[in-house]
Image (cartoon, rainbow, N blue to C red; front, side):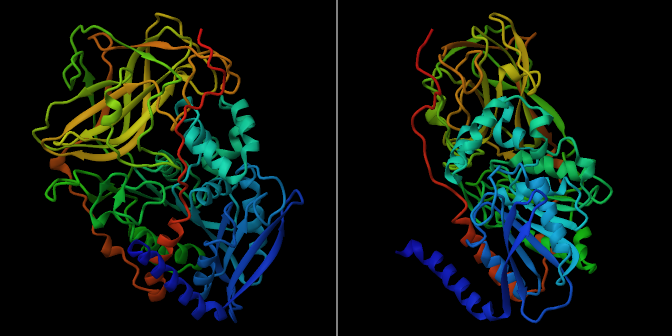
Length: 594
């Protein structure tokens, strides 16, 4: 019962607030027609007696407009902001077929046009939301709607193919299959499998890669290093900031914390507990500065905030360890030295170029994949988890540095360059990066995968020839981390990470049409001519001078809002994660081994 007390307290505070404000807010349910005749049901929250045209805030959701998100409508409207909350196409009260974001690029702008025509609107609209509520914001902005003025986008992706569905060419099974299942949207799965190769003809509606220049609004992009869309948040910021139209270029902000999906208000991330300063206590203050400026033309401090605000993770056991602090930058990625850490025959990870070592070979059996333990995932345990229980498998190759004699920082994009071969026409290669604590724990930092048939592009297949050696690059996305003195850097190479990724059957068959599987003999090369390595964005500790005090940017206005926003965020967080575990390997074909 003691554990439930904070949650009960949160509910009491929220219900008390609604009771005090409900008479001040008028809620209207409106049918908003889309260009194809489909009607989307929309709730409009307006402060009673407020007839003056005002900047407004739109939230589009697939999770039910009448759910916990309605609390935001009541509270923000009481503060004088018209709030529009809409069930997306085919979801809950709205008509049409659930196309899972494929109509966001038209439904969003159509709704904005309707808002601009209302008497309570001044024609300027901000958008707000995270995860699915953030993804639809990206595609809405890509249509360049004139009513949209700014955005607050949390833990989302501007390219569903690249970040959400087919990372490294491989299907993100745990994220996509389980999410679609929970939404009752598995009807789109066959279509996704049929389009497993990228083409603008199919994927353009859910990608901004071909039209960054059409975006003309500033946005706050918020993500976490352990979030399932971590790189999507960074790529979204970069697209707006450096490739966007005149209204977007140079006007966006990036905030990256040490968080899992939905974990920005917690110190606990995976198996690690970070200091109190890791929590997001400031991004909504930045949001209000932006909204006031861009929807109400009120001067503020939005431009004074740094362009990039990132949390450098570190040793959580030592209070004096470097890291575990916020820093700022005026661009991303940072200036750094890309250092190669080479794999050696004896399991050593070193910056020394390897000698002529023998190759390393292992057997990868798709019916016995390496199980996922933590990482940038959703629906199961996410974040930094100890990897030791799977590092002793025969199909996992481990390379570990000597104990560090001084702290080592890597901040930015992380890659692995592998020289590999296989006796099968297709297979996967996975790479994990961990921090080995003095007590032996191997704590996951980030990981990546490559489906070999997509090694030269996700728009076509190139199968492997037995015995041929291939140089490939595996994207481990980005991170910011300091290994403390006495810790060690570790890299693990394998060919599966299930259920985070679908286990490759090692055949030529398309993803949903396998009838057999092969056990692959996969080989990693690490001699002087084929020096496999991980490439880390090294930061010189002596040059670090960009620590930030978030309190200097605090918005002191809106006393009620500032008290409530933390409690509301914690309340909504309890509805954002799904605890569904999968224990049996998913092999969509018969277990016939040839």
